[in-house]
View 1 (tube, rainbow, N blue to C red):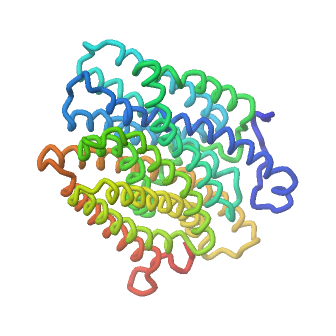
View 2 (tube, rainbow, N blue to C red):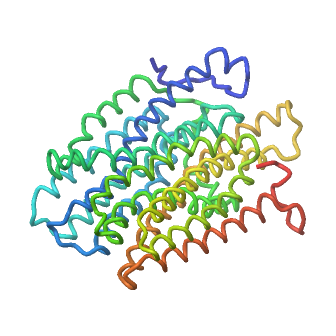
View 3 (cartoon, one colour):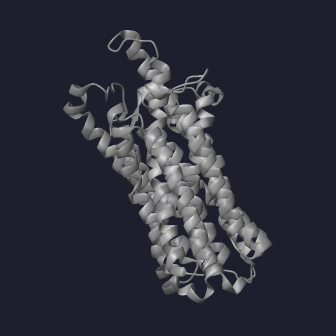
Length: 440
């Protein structure tokens, strides 16, 4: 059972960790994953609902707007959600954020129950699904405190992957639920699980005193250059994951209408991207997040080219295989970039200090607090990529009838991200040193 508030927490102390800290951290991770998973399901539920809205006669571009808005609102909400655990406690804020998911769940059921519901009402109600997107930032900011530096990549990767799989859960289960019980069930289905997540967090999670911080002080992290560099890279990784995952069903339906029944396979994309995310964190723990990230952006650009080939040849098999590869690379990049964040701020905080000294230990606490604050801002800015990708596809299809123009712009952006990664974290020469020596 949770202790509500834990006043002593030293995960980097091996004796403390093995003497019980690991067990407490694991318990908090499990219930954090459950709540975050549901956040993702509600955040992305409209990716399937829009495919089933044929009776409303909305255009493909209008449907992409409905899918895009939760990404936009969820991205913005991640900033205040980042500071929730530090202000109110990780356990307390997880209970609150889980209960807030009742709003989009109930409103979705209300909206689709009336065939006369106007388009603008759908936009407003879809926007409330953004509440689920905010959960990721608070969850990651909280869990980063529970684990030692050596296990940050794996722990954060598991936490994020457990949440990310929520996209796959929606795309796998909702066609079956909607087919059996109607569109309203796409919202009502999740209510018992939301209540279970809130109760689980209440009874089994903990607040950490060491994680308490003044949000105003934490916001100072927005003035750090590294926060914005990593935000750019995270647009390329997580923004791509959430964007491609939520766009997948509509993209299949609009570009391969003769294969519309295969929309049921769309869940495989986010499933693969989610399951491979811990591997990206694990690999980054061993060879360095910046190295993995650099290579991965090259792989993402190549995968985009293959997706374009599949569309140009109107080959569903090539398109589907390439799209799966593309989402898989976003998962690897999610894990590696998130591993970079705590390493960067740890390196910055402890620069010039001797390990084992009181000053070094104090700097570690500062570095972890900075990383926790930065995680929220980075995840917020990065998530905007999901909005841009959906709007890119919608605008490209509306203007040209195809997605080629959008894919070309995505590939160019990944090339830019690769250059930034090399220049800031791997370059070993030049007047302004990178963080290569810190093995970020």
